[in-house]
Length: 119
Image 1: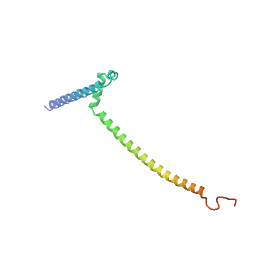
Image 2: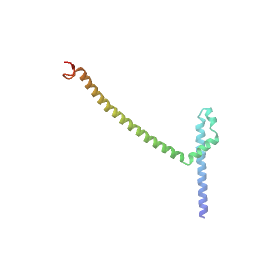
Image 3: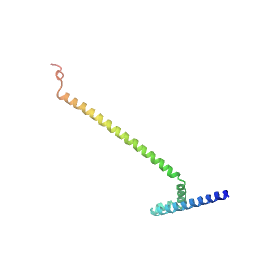
Image 4: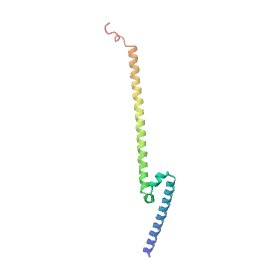
C-alpha cells in the first residue's frame, strides 16, 4: 500500500512540474511576442521550452543570487577603496598645499642672510 502512495505522490509531483513548465513556457512565449520579429524568429519553441525547464529546477535562481551577492560585495569594496583614495588625496593635497605655501613664503620673504650670499 505504501508503494502505491509513493507512486501517487510522484505522479502528482510530475503533474505539478508539468503544469509549472507549461506556465513558464506560456509566460516566455508572451514575452517573446513583445520582441521585434527578427528576435522572435531566433527563439524557437524548443529553445523556450528548454529555458522553461532550466528555470524549473531553481539552479538558475541560485546562480543569479550568488552573482548578486558577489556584485554587492564588489561594489562595497570599490566604494571603500574610493573613499580611502579620496581621503589619501585630501591628505596629500593638504600636505602639498602646505609645502607649496611654505615655499612661496620662502621665495617672497627669504630668511636673513640667504637672499644675497655674496654680501
